[in-house]
Length: 261
Image (cartoon, rainbow, N blue to C red):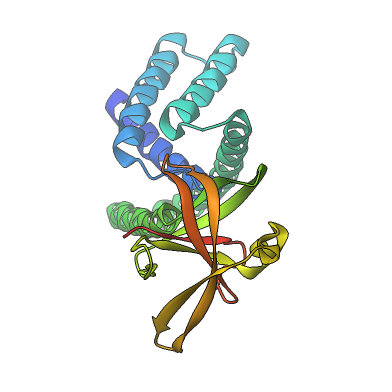
């Protein structure tokens, strides 16, 4: 019995599936969107998979299964670049979760299409063409969702704040709309939540009154000098002013709005 193995088609299908799985894994684990890196890693891993399949001639050998599993772990690490071991475990879990769901879905679709093609052989090319269009639409929608999430994550970061010898890990927001300036020194003023100000004991200190102007009206904000803050992406501020606001933003987890002017 002669068996034909189409290496190019096998590589293309593996490449497309790897890209799809990495997209879904990155979306679920909230990892950065790096399509160029994903394409390079997916192409290399597809070539490795092609080599194993062609020369080993079997998928049930224990060594091949172990090598394939190691290949998947390497692909996830190289493509998604986890910042911690815990994050890496999450990415691996999401990858296999998406793989199992996708495999079941594809098996069902394959059975349905197989029955249709048998009964109507003349529509086989039309079905393949429709499948390609649907896949392109899915990839486009997924890419748009990931880009929106990436833009949202770029404006929010974690920071380590040190004041009066005490350390606080807080969530900060980069906001280009914060133009609050001290009229006394001309320096930019951060905005912190009232809950955090109470937790840090700032309400026990003598405040500096900072006038503000907004659409909702004018007034004065209590401001305090804080010792040090280091933001996750590397920015450092020392001896800076932070004004207290009752309504910081819609996200209750945000403790500070940065002034990037």
